[in-house]
Amino acid sequence: MRAAVIVSKAVLVVLGTWAVLVVGLGLVALLPERVQYYAISPFTMFLWVCALVVCPVISCLVLRRWIRTVPGMP
Image 1 (cartoon, rainbow, N blue to C red):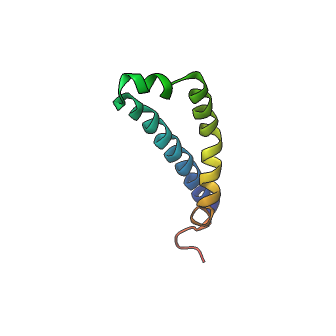
Image 2 (cartoon, one colour):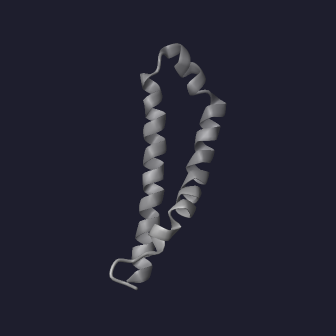
Image 3 (cartoon, rainbow, N blue to C red):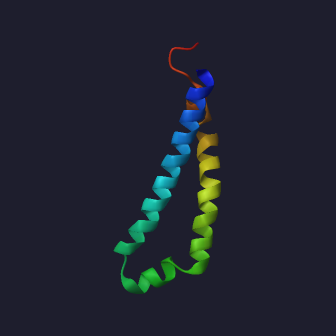
């Protein structure tokens, strides 16, 4: 049971991080057109894909104390 809670919390952190990154990319649509050209360049998309890999790891490291705690367990 303990392992299932820890894994589910880690999955929740990863999915939450990905959701924030996708919403952030979607917010580019609210920018003026001349800025969108630079905001969605190939290099920016490369950085965004790299962030999809790196940011969940950083998020799990930052939240590792919360991920390790299991309610009802000492």
